[in-house]
Length: 166
Image (cartoon, rainbow, N blue to C red):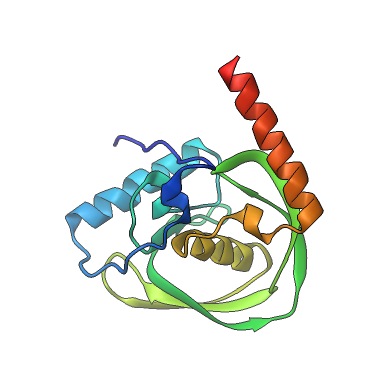
């Protein structure tokens, strides 16, 4: 199965809200399989469809040795607690920032068989879900940074861009 190229910071597709999925068909299953492969190649925990240029409200993720999972049209409720963790993003490779997010969440959505899923998640899994939903809403990790962190991140991104052009 062919993998996708992950869209990087600056690509306008990453700042657009994704559209609800209305049909779960063979094309969506193939997309999910290719996204999982792309996520594995990039050593990621999760990957949202907009990160591969597809404006659909779905993401894939994999925790540890468990099988990869696809979540379609996810929503999050019941935020509890706080947890700070150095968070990165496949669309901003190599940069990590201490981000405070809710420690526990409740996620609902649908699987590739159209069945409803309901997951109580905490810590890393909860963070992964929140991060991927940010992508589905057109938000990037860099938007969660305070003024000084964002300034440093933009400086580093400019430096990298100049190195690539040289």
